[in-house]
Image 1 (cartoon, rainbow, N blue to C red):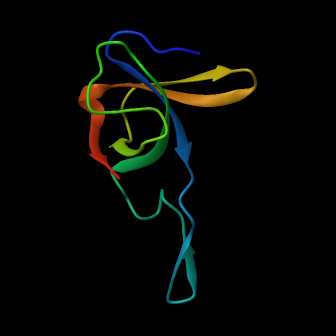
Image 2 (cartoon, rainbow, N blue to C red):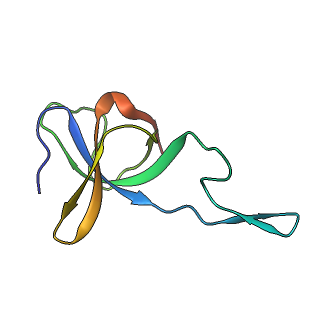
Length: 84
């Protein structure tokens, strides 16, 4: 699978639940605006991001796509906010 142009294929990394006062909070409970993911493929016009980078991107960005029974998020370079 190869992304084209300004697109990036990302495999989302699930955040571990955190405990606060005995309650287990998930990512949805914390109102975190960004998701974390591992870059699978980058388009030919993308600079500064390489495959296997761990990035943070806007939670509402892009679309999900299923490829070979696995779900991926397809975003553009403008949705990347941080490279780990």
